[in-house]
Image (cartoon, rainbow, N blue to C red; front, side):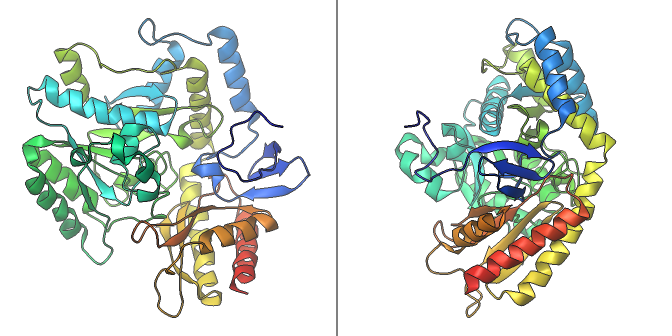
Length: 430
């Protein structure tokens, strides 16, 4: 009997090693990691230099508490990261995971308004569907019914107004104006922040608004004194072919940027909040401290992993690689739509791509979810890992696959990935 509390009652194979875009289980089966786990392993598996950087840091300084010390590795990383993201003078609040980071951003926005003398601002506007994390505050902000339903009694629903997801039939400006309508309905002087994923991840595979949307919502937020939070946990750090996906359609700078996943690319738990100079100064000039914290915030070994990963991303030009390999993968996916009628749409940016599945007779989602799980299982049987999901249409209907291999994937490996997915789609079609 195992003493492990597994994530579900599924029988899991035991992973034993990984290299590049491939993982191997105890039976010797090789898997092409077409989803980077949960779009985490941005630089690929088995990078010895990252492990070496972590070991060296652990030998030198493994842990300090953020209420007592800073560290040279944290100072260096914060500076390097701000430069990479083109967020000059932004401040890094480093934590261990995306849920912690979004939780931190939500609390930071609340304290910012209290310090400014507006304690009535407590609501956070989010979108449906969306996913911002598993901790209670991040989950309350999420518009993903299946993950929220069990815990709904623990949430104050009126604190989390939801606006509709991006509409590809609308211009970015018109789409963003729906935020204005929601702010007016909620009472703009009660709203603390608007948070969104610039390119949606798990809840609605790779959905993105039209150009101009993010600049427009940023302007609306400024007009109403609301902070704009960009949740780049999945879409940031080059995955969408730019350091920040919020800037794909223009030069938009949010007040707060939330990062995770690709920061340390799976080598260590690392996520973070980048706060604007105004947000930071308001908090520090007010109470003199952010009234929030985690034991492992700014952990030196995790930060050392992040610094080494950033070295690889920049040295190997992986942001550009994400654009190039993403173009190749998208072209191949479009070819698959011609052979597999139940592939209704493919979309996305860089190496964050979505495959929408449904009924070819109607062009809509199947009445009952399940095809995404079946395609994912068929792909796994062929040695390809994908990230299936459902519920994007109404909380139940709407099957999709999220694809996001490591940014270091080669052209030949993209071709292999497409071949394996082609076979899986054909198997399920039968």
